[in-house]
Length: 266
Ligand code: GLP
Image 1 (cartoon, rainbow, N blue to C red):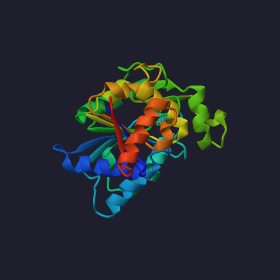
Image 2 (tube, protein in one colour; image 1 turned 90 degrees about the vertical axis):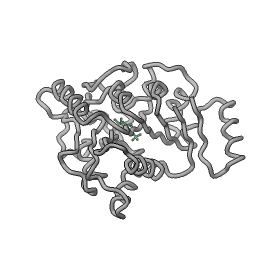
Image 3 (tube, rainbow, N blue to C red; image 1 turned 45 degrees about the vertical axis):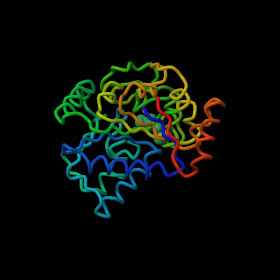
Image 4 (tube, rainbow, N blue to C red; image 1 turned 180 degrees about the vertical axis):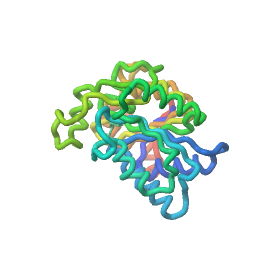
C-alpha cells in the first residue's frame, strides 16, 4: 500500500483522483464506496464543483455508503442519509436507484445487512472504496477487534467513538446512537481499490500504527496494508506520532522536493 503525505487540500486531491478513476474506468457503471465524516466534506464539495462545471457526471456511477446509525431516520440531521443528501446527492446528477445506504430503521437489521451485501455483489463489487479513519483506527464503524473478514453487520459503538462523534450531537454523548450498521472490513477489502483519508493530530496515533505498527484487528486501519491497491492520504498533522527516524526521513524528502507529496510504500 501507499501512504501519501500531502500539503495540498485532501478533498481536492481525492476528488481529482476519483474523477480520473471514473474517466478511465473500463467498465461502467463505476461503483463507488462512500464515507461520511468531517474529513471528507471538502472532497464532496470538490466533486459537486466538478459536476457543476461539466467535468464529471454521476449518471453512470453507483454508490454504496459505508455505514449508518441504527435508529436514526433519514430526516435526522445526523443520519448519514441526511449527510449524503446534503453534501453530495442533492447536488449531483446521480440516479436515485443507484444510491445505496444502509437503512438504520429497518425492522430486521440483520436482514438489511445481508441484502446490502447481495446488492453490492449484484452491482459487480465496488471499484473504488473511499473512507475516513476513526481516532481509534476504526474503518467505517468497524471498531477495534473487528475481524478482517467481517461483512456488513450491526456493531456496538465504543465509548471512544461515541465521545468523538458527540460533537455532532450537541456535545451530548447520550444522544449518540449506541449501535450502527456498517460494511465489514472484509467488505471494504473486497473492493478493487481503496482510498482512505485522515487529517489532523487526532488521527496521528492511528496513522502511526499503520505506518510503524504490526497488522492487527486491534487497529482496523492496519487492514489497509493487506490490500494490493490501497492508499492512505494524510496531511502533515496526521504524521506527528511517527517515530523520530521516520520523521527525519520525511523531512529529508520534503527538503529535496518541497512541493511534492511524500510517498511511503509498504
Ligand atoms: C465516523 C464514521 C467513519 C469516519 C469517522 C471519522 O465514525 N463512521 O466512517 O471515518 O467518523 O470521522 P471524521 O472525518 O469526522 O473524523
